[in-house]
Each structure stands twice: as structure tokens, then as C-alpha cells.
Image (cartoon, one colour):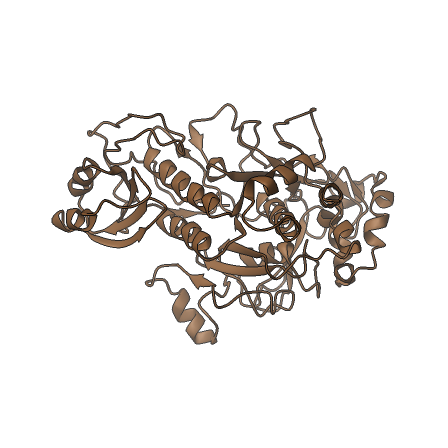
Length: 492
């Protein structure tokens, strides 16, 4: 999850908003020119341009140059551009020209909350009173499919909760023709659970050239897409896995890494936008991103909101399903609608998290695995579905999600050694991991329903979900907690 890295939410520059439907901002609103730009937010010198149409005006380059700027990239078809070198006055002047809907500062973003584990006052494992989860999970643990042979499969209450084993038992393991583009910290393509599953020809690092990620990759003799954190590798192997250590929802899906975050899990809005458009242009069936800012105040950030909506609308037109983590700050998104999050973007599937209330041990049994996680953001207006993300608790209590390390990673999370320094697994909680299994389900559905059908895939995910909580749309579960077994049954 991501937060604005210490920056205030400055006003966008002179946004002349049109009537485009893919924005959360009202039309014809023009923030006051007296608004002061946050200098620190613009410290990378970049601005995001949103066009009124899907392409740049014919003379756009001349306009930028005349105001002292340079074009970094024009995202043709998406109606976006990234430019550098403009002064505040130059940006405001450019925003007032024909065909330009708005110009807003780029921003640096980082995690909205740390990976959570080992909270001392959490429910102790010994105090757990198991319910019928042992019986409920008997079929899951009794699966003879290849994914169920993973060494630590018995710890994966999360996959049992969504009945992933039903697809495996039916021989549905996904297809290499389905591509999931993961916008995150890179992927450890050498990790045994992921070896051979990452398309290196389409994978790319979009972190700035000034980042020391490239020097680190060269020193280690690996590609720049290598994951030096572990977040993306953990997420990736929940989507698809060779099932060496841990199973994934699928076993044959193709992963493509679009590295937008460095090993500190920081990046910029412009890089995220480029990543979405890159994925859409390179054949993404599913675009997964486990980032959620603390939130944009829509009144001051209409430019950034419009830019994300432009990018996600473009990806949807290109046929991609978009799955986004809902966020980990326990925000009521129904009653705080001015606080906009990326999972509110148009066409995105926004995923909340569930987790057990107690567990006897790391291999279970578990109590109430579908309880809403205390940290998850919620709201009927925002959450589409829920997925298992884990409960904060003591290390090895069985409450969190067991995850794969990147062999070059730096996450410790209670391990005696960090990932990359001897540890092979870690534990964490969050909507990142709830969203990951949702992307796995989306990939499985694409393999059965066909490419370029994002609305139909979304409909199937929602209508096959288990209707938990309040009947109908629930603030914590949305349309329900995803259910792989019900989804594949609905396809028959």
C-alpha cells in the first residue's frame, strides 16, 4: 500500500476541466490561481498533462518548448503526457491552452502503512477456540492436485477460504496465453515458485534512471526488474506459482513485471500512469497494482484524479481487467468521499481484506476466516469484492498470509534473517494480498472466457462471490468474498 511520502496535497495547476465522463471531478471547475503549489511535491520537476481528447494537440510540442519545457512522454490514445522543465507560471499558462484539460504536479508516493506482523497485543494463538474450520478445510487440504503438493500449502488458509483447489481438481490451472501485468517492486524471476513464469521480453523497469536500483541490479548480475523488496514477488506467487514452496491461484499464467516502485516501495504518480499505459499497450489481460495512497483530496487534486481515470479508461478500452487493493487505513470511503483513492478509478475492481479471528497454530485450524480485517478500507460506494488478506497477530500465529521472499529482497518482518539473506518466506497482512488472489481468479476466468472481455470478467467475479455480511452490497465485502469454486461452476 502507498502513501503520499510526507507531502501536502497541493492544488493542481489551472485545471480547465471538460465534460469527460471518466473523471470523479465536476465539469467546468477551475481551482483558484492563488493556490500555491507544494514545492516539495514538484521537486522531480515533472508535470502531468491531461488532454481533453485521447491525443495531444498537433502543436503541443511547440507549446511546451515555447514555455521552457521538454516532453518526456506522450501517451497516445490515453490522452496523457509527462513533461519536465516548466516553471509554475509556465505550467499554468500551458493549462489554459486549447485541448489541454489540466496540468498537475507529479508526486512522490510511498507505503500507506508498513507491512504488519507481530503486534504484541494481538490475539494469542493459544487462546484460539477453533470452530468447524478444520472440517471446512478438509477438502482443501485433501486435494491431490499438483498445487496442493507445495511444501507449505497447509499454511495457506487464504487459498482454502476462496476454494482455489476446486479449479485445480478440475484441471483448471490457467493458461500461458493469459498475461497478468504486475505494477509493483519488480519480480524475482529466479524464485523457484516463479521461475519460467515471467515474460522477460515484455517486463520493464520504469523507475527513474537516477535510482540506484540499476546499479544494484548490475552489481548482482540480474535484470533491472529484479525485486529488491519482496512485496511484488509475494503478490506474484499468489497469482501464479510453480507450487514449490507455496501454491498460487493458478499455475500456468504468464506474469509481466512493470517495475514502478524501488526497494523502499516509493515511486511517482507519473511512473504509475506510464505503467498502466505500458501494460495496456503490451497485451495485458489483467493489470494488478497493490498500491493505495493515503488519498487525494479531490478538491485539490482534480488533475491527478483525472489522470488516473484517463489511464484506467484507456486500459479498459484495450481489454484489460484492472484489480486494485482497497487500502489498509480502515477508512470509511462512503463518508469520506473527498478523499479519493486509486481503487476508486474508473473500471477498477477495488478489493477489501478479510482474515481469521483466531488460529490454533500456523497450520490452523482457523476461526472465522472471513471476518473483515480491522485495517481494511471499506464502503459500499468503493469496495467491489473482498479477498483474504490476513489478520494482524503474533509471528507464526497462523493469522497472517504466508508469502514468498525475493531471494534478493530486504524484507525482515520478524525473520531472523531478511529475505535475500537466508529467509525464504515472510508473513504479512493487507489488501495487497486480497487483491492478488482476485487477480489470480481474473486470470483463470480469462483463460476460460476469452481475451478482451473486462466487463464480463468483472461481472463473473462479482456474481460468483459469496454474499457475506449484510445481504446484497456490503460495506466490507462489496458484492462478496471471491469464490473460485462458484466462479468455475458458473462457467459450466
